[in-house]
Amino acid sequence: MERKQRKRPAHEESEETLRTIMRVAQRLFMEYGYRAVTTRQLAEACGLTQPALYHYFADKQDLYLAMAQEEIARLRTALERIARRDEGVQERLEHVALYLLSSTRHDHGLMLHDIRYELAAEARATLNEVFQAGLIRPIASIFEDGLRQGLLRDRQHDGSDPITATYLFMSMISQFLTRSRDTLHPWPEGQQGGDAETAHLIVNTLLHGLVRPIQGQRKDGAQASGAPT
Image (cartoon, rainbow, N blue to C red):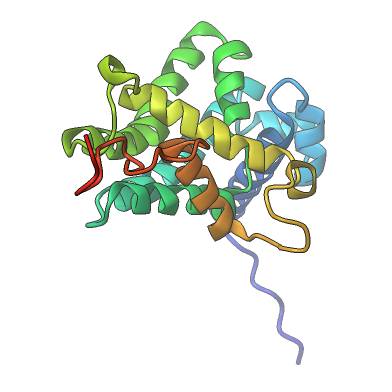
């Protein structure tokens, strides 16, 4: 005798639908940006009607706000864990770059643009605070460690403050997330670089620049041991 499939409770179907909406919203918003995505596209991608979508979220901005908060919370957990690692500044920054390059595949610079320019004032203020706490501050704490240890130059010595350094770092990562490696040509002809090599390239360039060190001078600008003064 054929058993009838048990019908799932309404709240289970509702939770599954909500997860689907959030997953689709994350994919579309992070790939195309807030302005380019419509509620009709979102509903169709979820297999819903627009009225059904509005049953879960009041409007597109409400959905974007929920999606961005969930995405940033996920990133914050990983970034804070990396920032606390008992490793050097360069090693931790490379772990951050590798994580963002290999785990997200999204340009968070696009999210920052949407927060700044596409949302209403109240939503913009809410997400800006979440963005700062979830992405910027964990990474900035690594640069702060570098300043405290005397490894990095501050503004008074032609360096940078931790927040500015973090935005420079994120901007460099963004270039590799939005443009193909074939376009950027970061590797010698015939050599294929992976995410780990790209992470090292980004961090090494940011910290040490492209200029060859002066003979007898370390990368951090200090005089090498035994070098003439």
